[in-house]
Length: 333
Ligand code: NAI
Image (cartoon, rainbow, N blue to C red; front, side):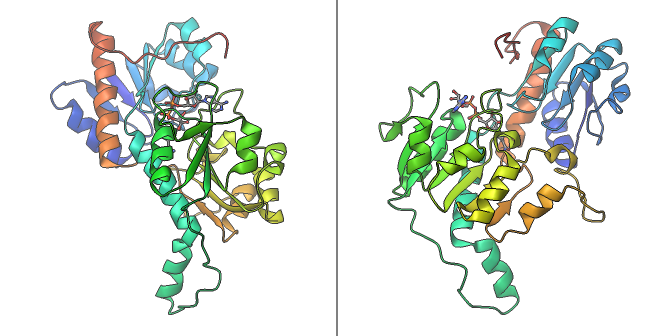
């Protein structure tokens, strides 16, 4: 098949080309993000391959359809950025990579916890400048602390297991408790999780129910000085509410791998320009905030699996056999 690959960074090209070597689909790589302005690039292609910050709203899907696209092969697990109702109406099949490395994301969430706790990012800069003072670097033992996990699917469960390994108590909230959860994962109502947890980590998808789940009301119920980690989706967190929580000290440490307006920022080198997102820049001024630019998935294993499953989806769509990880429109959401 002829596939237009959007948001194709050099690493995407390397891993996709490697997986395609034995297959011979025609892949054309576009560095551009898929938007209404760039959608014409896909003219004449059978399918588009897109990532998390590509826009697949009704207008873009209509353009893709008009230009002959019948398949959207997502390189992500999340599909909250696709207007599935429109895709279904237009007869466009949407496929995704349901799991590529839940370990990669869970381990990155743990990296944020450890860095924020011991402020290793501050220590790194201090030591390079000959400043060996310890003031401001005070951490706490993870052992014995309570960790709240919101969303205990593949990633949340691995995160829970790792934190249990540190000697933490794990409380969790999920409308569908995971039957594979170890007995040490204690499911509690969300309010109870907020009230007990010293560290809260978000591993739920973005849905109408989780949109701004972490708002002023939720933060008010949390422990003073709580550590909040978000490697899920940016919009699960209401950024102004979190900034207010940081200013008041209610939130003691914040680790973000995702941000609600990240489409305009992440995956690009913007260091030569002016970043005009005042809310994001405010976040970067706090010494107790650590932000990474949606890199939790970014391991060699994950990129290999993403490329392999994406191309297997394209194979299955083309041949009508094999496993197609299709995203089905659910009218209830
Ligand atoms: P999963 O589908 O295995 O698990 C999600 C869990 O969240 C499910 O158990 C579900 O019941 C639960 N959930 C749904 N609504 C909830 C609610 N209102 N409250 C609490 N729990 C709720 O998904 P997986 O693979 O564990 O991924 C989780 C999320 O992580 C993805 O949806 C995606 O947004 C994010 N992600 C982030 C990446 C990154 O690089 N930062 C990479 C991959 C995924």
